[in-house]
Amino acid sequence: MKIAVVGAGAMGSVYAGLLACAGNEVWAVDTWREHVDAIRERGLRVEGASGDRTVRLDATTDTSEPGPCDLVIIATKADGVASAAASVGPLLHGDSLVLTIQNGLGAAERICRHLPPDNVLLGVAGGFGASMRAPGHAHHNGMELVRLGELGGGITERLERVGRVWSDAGFNVKCFDGINQLVWEKFVCNVTYSGSCTIFECTIAGVHGNEHAWRVASSCAAEAHAAGVAKGVHFSFDDPIAHVREFGQKIPNSRPSMLQDYLAGRPSEIDAINGMVPVVAREVGTAAPYNEVVTAIVKAKERANRPEGRT
Image (cartoon, rainbow, N blue to C red; front, top):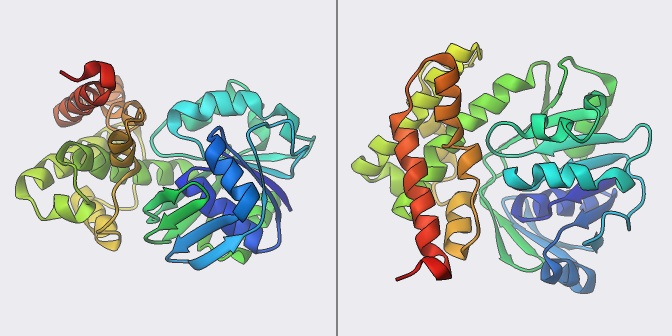
């Protein structure tokens, strides 16, 4: 299968590297010139739970270079989804599928402003804990599960075909009829650890080991779960605190991408993660004070972390 991974950051690089290693024709598309140049010169190294390999694959900063692909994976940050969707036209032919895999809520809606929804798939990746070690070098702490679903629901032949491509590349993959539930279940986990790890500047284990940090994190989880229930989401669990603790215990040494962004001085996905809980809560009549405060603190830290914000 010919595949383009648009947004070849930490997670996108893991996807691209393993899919290319399995024999697919893969293009890594990213705006990070040094990363693209490193892949072209030395290959893409993917290290961690899947092993340690350096894979030769194509890389570019220009979506017009690869030509039409069978599968386009949008793996950007949440705030880059819309611009990525608007740029992928040259990568598509009549039967191309677009698979979006992001943290937070709202990715599908942003993509469908630019692309027809009929060929859009949703993905939820859990338990990877990925980070960039250097240009051309990605690392991941775990490799739990990639969940795939049709935007409109149902298990289709094309969905299962895409699932087999991922499975053949070494990913643990399941196809689901109702992917929205899984988006929300991952969202609750993101809400728990993204903001709290950033505020306290620690790993997931650090949040678990600090009673004050855990109170903040678990309260964020409870608020997100309550908003989802009120919105009509059918969760597979009744106890969100037990669910997120179990999730976090699988990748204790991980630093969420939000913390990595903060430490690197990059804008984070706070608005699509903790910041989305108050938005949904207002729609459904629940409350989200912890998430409101966490969002405000992360934004304040980010502003202070910019060179012009330092005093």
